[in-house]
Image (tube, one colour):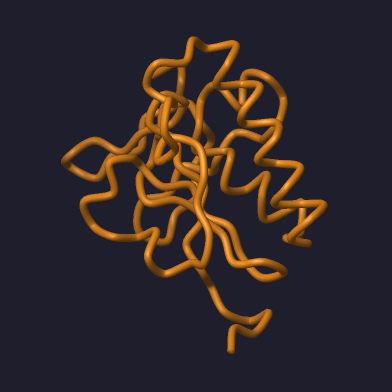
Length: 132
């Protein structure tokens, strides 16, 4: 059983475009954004999945994908009782969801550091800010 203290991943990759976004979830427990195709089988860890793994997703235009995304969010949050905070955290790895205001910007992590979205760490370990 998963406890609240468990640290479950929110996404399989640092950035997942809407065209390749698959949401996987376990009702009432957890949701994760997964890059589709899911070669590493992250989606198998959870009970349900939708979006890029669905028939017809690749043929949809952006408007159709956004419509399907909103339908899936209704199922995940309302029908399956997954906490909205978990859904927003998972969606934060999809740039289109962030631009639409469905999710906050994800924290940029490297080791134990959490950096602002504009920062980066060079190969020599130097942290450069947005104006460096």
